[in-house]
Image (cartoon, rainbow, N blue to C red; front, side):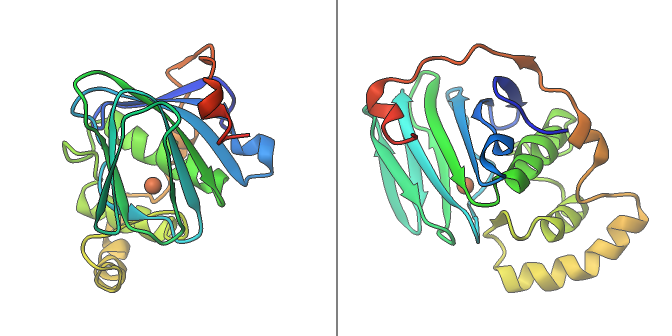
Length: 208
Ligand SMILES: [Fe+2]
C-alpha cells in the first residue's frame, strides 16, 4: 500500500510523529518530504547511514541537534538546514524542552525508505518489538537489515561485522518466523490523515 500525502506515521519509542507532505509515489520513487514532530527527549533510533540516499533537514521550530561523522550541529532558528550526504554517519535528537518540528527530505530510494522506516521500523516500535530507543531486537534486526541494506544501515557494530553476524543469524531468524519486511506492517493504516501545516517561506525554499 503506497504512502500518501497527509498520512501520519508514529513511532512511540522515538517520540516521533511524521506527516507526509510529498510521498515517493508522486516523485517516481525518488523523493519523500515529511514534517517530523518530535517530543522532548525524542530521537532517531540510532546512528546510521543511507548508502544511496541523501537527506536534508530544515528546522521549522524548536531545537534539533545532529551528529554527523563526528561533528555536532544544532539547528535552533527556523530555516536553518543541514544536508547529510549519502554514506555519512548521522543521528539526531530533540535538543530542546518543547516539541520540535522539522522537515526531512529523503532523496534517492525514497519508496524503499518509506517501507523500511515508516512501516517496518515504526510498526515494530508500535508493537513494542524494539528496544526503548526503537532498535529492533537482534533476530529481527538481522533479517530487516539484510532486506534493506541499500536503504539504511545502523553503524554499530561495523558493517563487515554486521554482514557476517546477520548472515549467520538470518536463516535462524527466518526459521523462527521473523520477516525482514512484514506484510502486516506494509498494509497497516496510518494513525490518521492530517491537514498539512503551512511551511514558512524560509523553510519551503529548501524543499521546492
Ligand atoms: Fe537518516
